[in-house]
Length: 518
Image 1 (cartoon, rainbow, N blue to C red):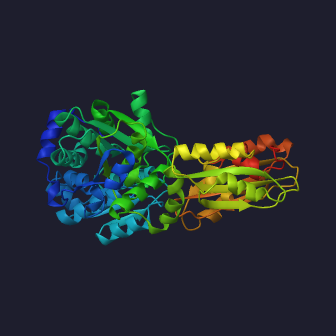
Image 2 (cartoon, rainbow, N blue to C red; image 1 turned 90 degrees about the vertical axis):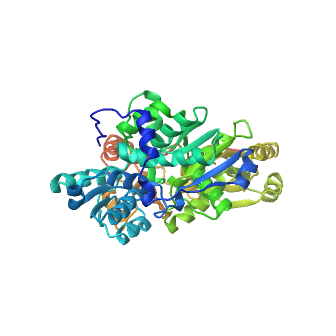
Image 3 (cartoon, rainbow, N blue to C red; image 1 turned 45 degrees about the horizontal axis):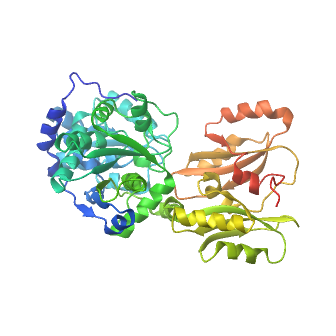
């Protein structure tokens, strides 16, 4: 996708002037800067949440969309507008179109949560669902705009959009003049470009930190290399920030004003959602909690007592994602360890293991008889923090239990915890893959059709996690003489296939021969 080409670059001073005179408050409101006392005490910082989830569309996107559309002339408004979005920008455009008396055609990818699609329709916009990614929707919307002559409203890479989002930075400055650090979620860069342009001009000593999901880190990579990087693949758990390439103008401003970038995992995002809920009984969407996750990660090594602000950018969360979020909050906050533990298959072993675990809560405990020598247990164990985790591991080692720490092993948490006890007795070589595919009606059947029947499927595990991507663990029996053909088969698949045959979790629970002995 292309960025916005400017005839002349707008100076930072001019951005600040336009932000101060923005029209966004015709539809948006000044959102509160709420203290987070629980998190402040735990992190030993003074934590504040900028509550953009309280906007009329439960997202900051109403600001940039309205500011952009107020600049259209009467002829453009009469024709109507076109937009592409993963959901929140679309709601902003639909709301602005209704306020300005024009029509809007919105294109969203098929992975857009239903709560966002319903909201767009309820505002009177024409909704088209197209493609699996934002980029698919973007190109389709661009074609519609070219064909009809309608104005395309870019979600982030336009000065007017940046100006609208920048009003958040002005509000933060007016609400707290002694902020030490501000954390901003980053997708295409419109929000951080506007916020940073304000904060760094009015309060140069305040640091502005961008936060991205670790599997959608286009701005992080771009800032590191000094040029815009196009990602070949983006994860979409934080769908509101799942962008392959940041904007041209947003990148220019970020290079000028953003102090640093950081990434967080899906587990850390889930933990942040829980933190927000416990503070204010609010449920941000994954992208909306990015900044909170970044603040929490930063606080682990930061000097205490700083005024730290996280922008909660949106709260359009599909209810069926809550199960996945709840499952991951403990590991994301460092309050749960996931371990595989080997114990002798003999009387008294379980009792001895329980003594080694101590009074910690077991969140999960999976076991199945394997052979008469050793047993392997998959266990989730509550810990109070890093020191307690180290103490647990020391206790297990002292009791002479062999264990593997799988807390950061995505395959273990997605699949193995539901498959414990399944070793394949057939000696035919087996290769195991994680495969992601769009989660929508008929997607699983289409995925199975693509797999074909040339190689025997020796393992298949799929579970609907309430996310926008379906995730399967698939094992294939691959005779040695067909290895080359099989490798070509995996490359040609339309779905990303990542081999995990050598993953510790796979080796310990699913391979033909157990590699450990006690």
